[in-house]
Length: 114
Image 1 (tube, rainbow, N blue to C red):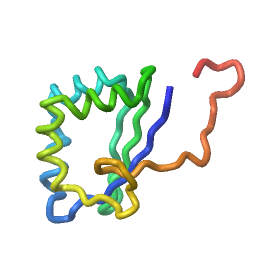
Image 2: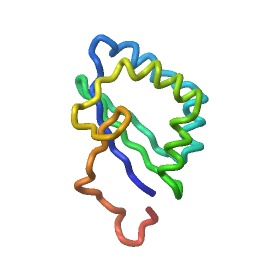
Image 3: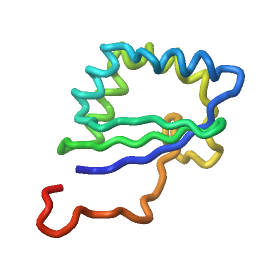
Image 4: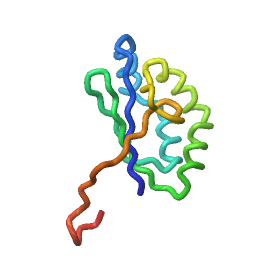
């Protein structure tokens, strides 16, 4: 399992629209995320900063992300959500969100299943 954390800014003028969209994420988008082996996906908000965390449970991250990016329902979803977001200037080659580097992780106690 691979843990992924990302961040992006929320455009204040689109705050209510973004929150409304995420109050009822389209079932087709959720299905595409599941097919891409994404689990335990959460998005958090602090001021105008969004923080996302998810776990990848597949064997080919690049292929699963390519399939997700090609999914028609997901592409429509991004067409609705992308204008609400303002990428960080240092996002590198990512589509929108900036990947964060993990600096620490608390592992389960010895003998505890992860």
